[in-house]
Length: 138
Image 1: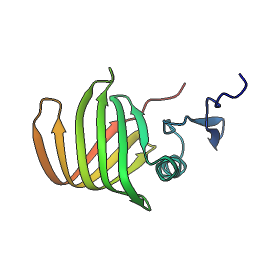
Image 2: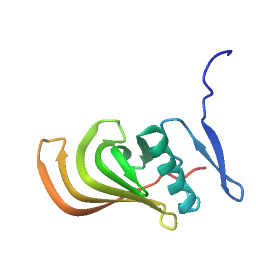
Image 3: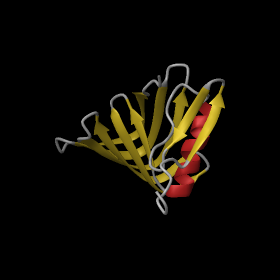
């Protein structure tokens, strides 16, 4: 249709016979080389100020106040389950994400953070690492 926005922001080709779709509010997912995927994640954070990553367990939305290289500073993180129900929210002074392509997992490191679960319980952590399985592309 004339005047409508394109559905995809771009298509990145990362490895042989493998392409990532970068949708405006979604990060690329799959088993591609981790530095390229991580670069796309942090590029989207710089460009849009937010990042949504779909995992097998649900989705994670990162909302940092600013980024310094690969570190998100003063970040709010919303955690959702597979039914799109919010399961928790985190506030962290510093966070970093990376992809372990060999295990097809996203690894999230939080430092100096507060975590509130859906049941209202609140916790504090000086340092916490969460691992989430990434969906496989067919």
